[in-house]
Structures are given as structure tokens and as C-alpha cells.
Image (cartoon, rainbow, N blue to C red; front, side):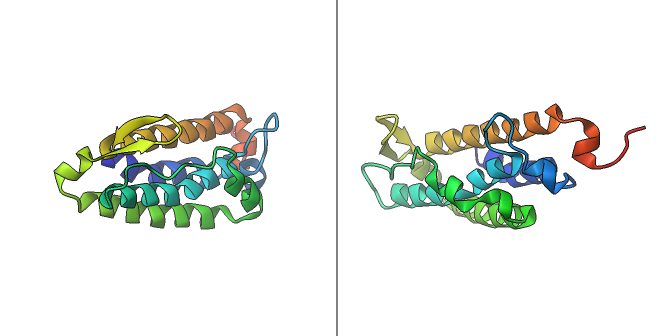
Length: 159
């Protein structure tokens, strides 16, 4: 599971680098743009770190996520340079992975209540849950990129 988290920044960069800014910020059907999806992953990394610390501190319940995603909407990620989003996500995710790499195996079995799912979740399960969340948004970014004509994505003629 840690490897899935470790690989997310590279996958995100692969999807977003060398894509024209007007394509990265294009919203389809009122849904988040590629860049907003990337920013959302960045926003949630602090929640992941907070929850890991809650497991380490022996918390009975995990901090609840803001299901309205207000932080992502308020950040106006389409107005932020994509490199800042990518670099900050890589830095925070590297911190997360380093912390997980330093833990003893038995810590991954610690349990706390997941507030939205209303069930006990081990740390390893929370990591899996986050990796699945990463994959959802990375897939969405990939879908957006593939749905656009190639000339818009690369800015070059494909002949």
C-alpha cells in the first residue's frame, strides 16, 4: 500500500506536465478540471497526515473529512501554477511516505473509527482507502486528457 502512495506524485506529474495550461484548467460539464483534481489530492494530503498521527496517538476516531470539498473550491486551483501544485503534492506525499516507512509493522494494525463510513479501520486500511482515492482522481485526470483532441493536449500538430 505504501508503494501505491509513493508512486502517486510521479503519476500525477506524468498526466499534467507538458499539457497546455488552458487544457489543464478546462472544466467539462461543470466538473473539476485536471488541475483542480490535482489540487484536491494536494488538499487531502494534510488530512492523511493528520489521520496517521491520530493512529499513532491512539485516537479512538479519525478526523472527519470535509465532504463539501470547500478547501478545494476555495483554493481556485485553476489560478495556481500547476508546477506549484505538483511540487507541493510531491513534498507532502514524500513526508507521508517517509513517516509510514519509519513505522513498526504492528502499528499498521491499529484501529480507529472512520467517521463517514462509521466502521473501525486499521491504519493499513486507511492507507488503502487513500490509494484508492488517489487512483480515482488520477483516472479522472487521465480521462479528461484522453477526451481532448491531441492537438489541444500537446499544443502541437500530430501529423
